[in-house]
Image 1 (spheres, rainbow, N blue to C red):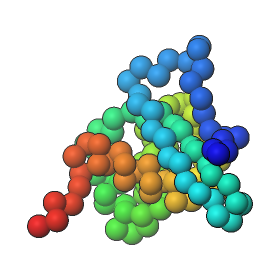
Image 2: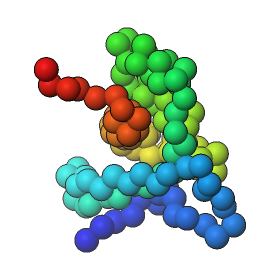
Image 3: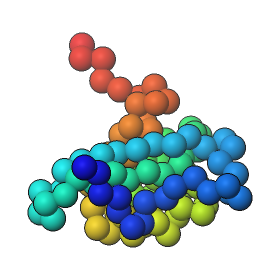
Image 4: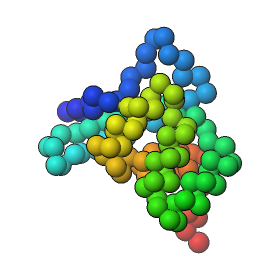
Length: 110
């Protein structure tokens, strides 16, 4: 069973998500005893945004990824994302890493 977080966004008929992609993360919140699904729409980051996130991650990864995802989330979802990150701080890194991977950042394992 999936329990939706009240701050999770769902596509609304009157909101345009053009240029944004839906990203979804489902996990088991063992502290609350429920499965949670979080969905947000993000736009593709540009090179300066990626560089800022990578540079900041060395000092404070959670803050850097929090700023990164807040900058590229759909404007109508900015408050919901902040509320979700407040409840589940790891979401910033989870979404941030997924977005970085989607634009080619990764570990080649060499």
